[in-house]
Structure formats: C-alpha cells, structure tokens
Length: 315
Image 1 (cartoon, one colour):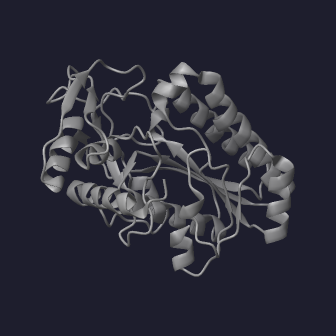
Image 2 (cartoon, rainbow, N blue to C red):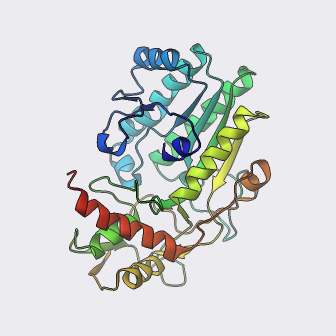
C-alpha cells in the first residue's frame, strides 16, 4: 500500500480484518472490510474503481494451525482464491500477483538454494493450499490468453517499513523474528525453539529471511512486468543464504542489548529443516534487486517497530 502511494498510485484495500487493523490504512485510501469470498461485493468494487490488477495477499499462514485445522486452510486459501480468480476473469481484470510460499517445496533434498522448477513436496496443508492456488492460476492463464499472473514464493519475511509507517502488528504472531523481538521488548516472558536436534550445524532449523521492503519491491516489479510486456511468472523471493534459529536469536540479543529466556521445545510437525532461495529468476525477469540483505538490519527494523507499537496505543 505505502509503496504504491509513494509512487503516485492509489490502491483500493479489501480486508476482512481477521488479523489486520483499520488504523494501518491511511484515511485517504479507499477501504472495504469485506471477505474475498463475497464475490458480488468484490465485483462491485472492481467495477467501481476500474481495477486493472489484483495483488492477492488474503489467506491463512500458520503451518501448525493448518495441520490442526486443514479444511479451514483449504477453504480460506484455496476455495476463496478460486472465487477471486473467477471474479477477476468475470470483471476483465487481466493481472494478478499472488503471495505464495516456500512451503510448496517442503524440505529440499539438497542444501543448495532451491530453484522454482524443482520437485514440489509440501509438508503441510498450508503449503498444499498455496500450491493449489498456483495451479489454478497457471491453468487459468493457459485457458485465457489475456490473463497473466505472478506467483511470488515468499521465504521468511521480517522487518518493518524503514520510515516507521508500518510493520507486523498481529497479536499472537508466530514468525520467529517477530516473536523474538516481542520477547526482547518484554511483551512475552520467553521464546520457544522448536527442535534443537536437526541435522544442521547448531541443531536448529535454517531459514532464508527477507526484509519486507525488499518483498514489497518484488511485488512492484512483478506488477510492472504484468502491466508491461506481460507474461506469467513464478518466482522465489529470498536472498539465497540461510540463518539458523539460534543465529537469529543471538542477533536479536545483540540488537536489543538484553538477554531473554529461550526454552527448548519438541519439533513441530510440518517444519522444514533447511531452505534457502535461488533468486536468479526474479532478477532476470524483472528489475528487482535486494536493498536490505542484512540480518542485523532486518532485526533492528523489527525491534524498532515493537517500540513504536508500544507507544501507539491502538490495542
């Protein structure tokens, strides 16, 4: 949203606010508190605002929750995406950017950064639900020559807007850097490390962390590609290097300048052991390049956002 405003566009925001907040949207931006499952209302919004492209972020994102309640994930992530794609077609929208996930890969058989065309082996309903939407987009694009899409496979997103305007605010968040920064800020009394006996250098899972601003810029690049030369794309969004859970926690301690309680916990079902992104494709097909490829910078912006949230008194 902010990136579009910064370059002179006015986005139209649709969100049911199941985990988001109305205060995060500037009053001058058109906003509708609507579920994307409400196809009639979505169609009216598209027509009223003459929407030419949809950036589809809506969905549920917790691997453990998806294992406990798979049908809810297939409903919210897959069935509702089906409806949104159909509505886009019915209304003449020719471009969609979809937020997919590295969870479509599962745990790779190699330690090399994963390329988009390797075998896809999701380990959770979350990963499967996102992959099904990718398949729907691919088949729809094949059947309708004027409809193109970009599916961006996110790796681990963290950080906050460098200008301090926005950041991850969801209560009860489960992403590592968010939870660690909340703990360092005194909002939680401890953090749990799920699994310390994996076949990795320190026994904890390894992830590729991408700053949210670089991810936002990837969406702008994908959108510009669709609006310009066109052509669909599936692309990784990551940096190609991994950090373990303990690497991250040590970095949070250094940035915050304080220790906090770290507890060992059993492995979680569905967790990928180690994965990093080969980002060659997005770099070759768009003008995207990383600007914030530094773990300490990612953590610092996340920690600064926690301090800002504490002072905002929105909830």
